[in-house]
Length: 252
Ligand code: SF4
Image (cartoon, rainbow, N blue to C red; front, side, top):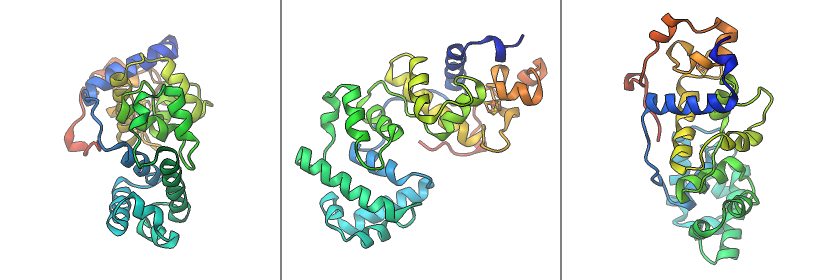
């Protein structure tokens, strides 16, 4: 018996948190951008690189000035401004519908009221918006309002499945709930868990050919054991203890 088979999913999730926290370093819980920007930028980021998302966001506001201008823009012009994203013709009407609803319900383009709302109510309100799923809603609530929720994107989901923190058939949507139940309801822990696993999926646990040699999770990872057998003492001893900045830049 090895740690890959003897540790429960909860134990793997906690080990993952402790090990990646040490590997990538602790992160403070500080909003990286305003709630409105987090919401719209995350929408623009779907299947789009960070550089292309930033370019779309800045072109949109340069072209139309502010949210009022974006709302009043002609749809083809808005789609053109965000053309570096994957689906500009789909995202442009979504952005305007989101802005229309926020303005109609709140009277201004401001999401600060979410700070006072219970988590479930905030999630429901955000996910009722077109194109806003559980991941985007959770990012806004966690990053901007320090609510105890866990965003699960494709990277977090892949690492969790391979290690065995969740089952191989668990959907991304369901993973939000299962992983959250295995972690303390502490926004700092949840932010660190999200970002560390996001980076891990981006830089080590690749979709094709994961770089298991460099991975500090190999000692209890199901995928590793299935492909390479139980992690040996030599393999564990040769595993780097910390992220090396020479391997690439971690996007915050
Ligand atoms: S050991 Fe390999 S498959 Fe497992 S988490 Fe690490 S990189 Fe991914």
